[in-house]
Length: 591
Image 1 (cartoon, rainbow, N blue to C red):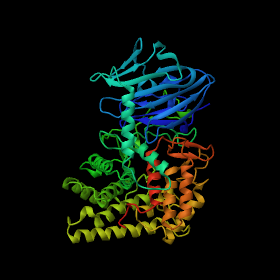
Image 2: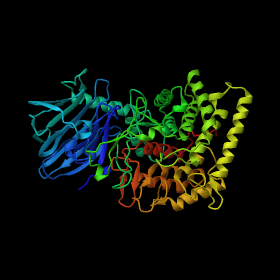
Image 3: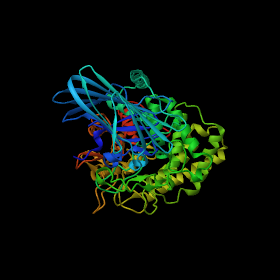
Image 4: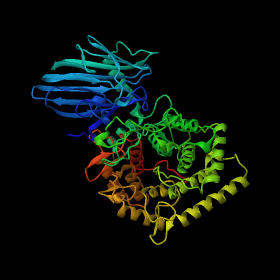
C-alpha cells in the first residue's frame, strides 16, 4: 500500500527535521540542515533511497502520539507475542545533530529488526561503510555518520541490519549521530539524559504560552511544530522541511519548500507576537532585515534559512517521486520572480513589531525601509507573478497591488516613521497611497461580477482576495468585499475547505489550500458571523493527522493531505485564526 503524507510525524532539533512513518521507518532526513542534501530520501522513492526502520519483524498494529507538550514521538507496536514502544527524538544542543531511538518492551516478548540504509545526495550516493561489532561508521565527502547499537550489527549490500528481541521491562537504544571531517560524531551519548533534556526544552518553551483559546491542543501543537521549523542559528523559519510532495496526485506541481519565504513574514510575526514569543519574533524580524540587506531592488521572495540567496533549481531524475509524482525538484526557481507582495510583507512585519513594542530597528535598517518605499513607488504598476508564484505571463494581480499599497499605508501612518520625515514628503506619499487604492478598486473590481478579481481585466476569483480585509485594505463588511467573500464561499469552497482558484479544465485538480480556509474564517469573523467562522475553522482542524500536523493542502476527493509537510503557513494560519476567534489580537493594518 502506498504511503500517505498524513502517515508521517516530525521530529527535529531546530537545525533539521526527520519524518517518521507510523510503521517505524524514518524516510526523510537532511543533514546537517533543513536545506542540506537528504541522506534518507525514501519519502520520494523507495527504501533503497535511504531510510532507517526499527519495527517488529512480523505483522503488528501500531499507534503513536507525541509525549505531552514535546516533539518526542512515541510509537507503540502490538504483535501476537507482545507490545513494544519506540521513542524517537532529536536532542536540542549545539554539539552536533543526533537522532535517538529507544525501544522498550511493554508486554511479552517481541522480535524486531533494525535496518539502516544511508544514501546521500538525495538517495543517490552510497557512503563508505565500516561495521565493527556494535558500531557502524559511514563516510562520504565531508559527511560522517556513526550508528551506536546495543546489539551486533551486520552489513549487506549497503544495508546495516540487526535482529534483536526485547521482553517486558527490557530496553534497546540506537543512536545515529552526524559529524564531518572537522568534528567527528560523538562516540557516546547518554540517551536518558538526552531524553530528559529534550523533554525539559520543549515543555519549558511551550510553558511560556498562556493565551486561552477554545482549541488549546491544536494551538499548542502548532506552536511546537512552528518552533521546530525555526532554524536556531539564524531565526529564519523554513516553510516546510520537505521538497516535491505533490499538490495534485500524479501532477508536476512539486516544489522545494526548505527555504524561508518573505511572503510569510507578517503571518509569522503576528502569530509569534500574539502567542507571547517576542524573542522568536525579534529573531525573525532581524533575519528579514539581514536577508534583504541594503538593496531592495534585488530583494528575493525567498532565501535559504541562513539568509543566503542561491536557490538554483534542478531535478533529481533518479527519484521516482512521492506516489510517483515527478519531477523531484531541488532548489526553487521562483526565488528570482518579481512579487510585489513581498515589499508589503516586509514593511508590515516591521510595522507590526513596532506596534507590539519590540525595539525598533537601527537607523541603517530604517534607511533600507526608505529605499523600499522609493522602489515600490517606481514599480507598483509593473505586472508580477503574484502571491502563488505563477510561472506564466506576469499579471497585474490585485493582491500584489494591495500589498504594494500596504508599503505606503504603513509608512505614512506607522510608528516606524514617526518624526523622521518632513510633513511635505509624508503628504506626497499619502496622495500616492490614495491613488493606489483608487486604482486597485477601479481596475481590480469587476462591476458585472460584483466582485474583486484575481488580476486586472480577468473575471476569475482567487482566494488571495480574502487577504484584502486582513491587511486592512478594505473592510470585510464593505459591499464589494462582502460580495467577493460570498462568491468565494460559493465557487471556491468544497466540503467546507477553500481552493485557491477554480481547477483548470483537463488538468489534475489541485487540492484545497488549508491556509485559505483560515483566511475565510477570519473574514467571516470580521463580518460578525462568529458561528460560521468557528465552523469553517473547525473544518480545518478536522483534517489534521492524528498527531495534529497539517500539510499545505487537503484533497477532498481522496480525503488525503497534499503538498509539503508539515507546512509552516498552515500552522501559522491555524494559530492566528484561533486567536482571532477567541478575543482581541494584534492585527495587521493601522486600526
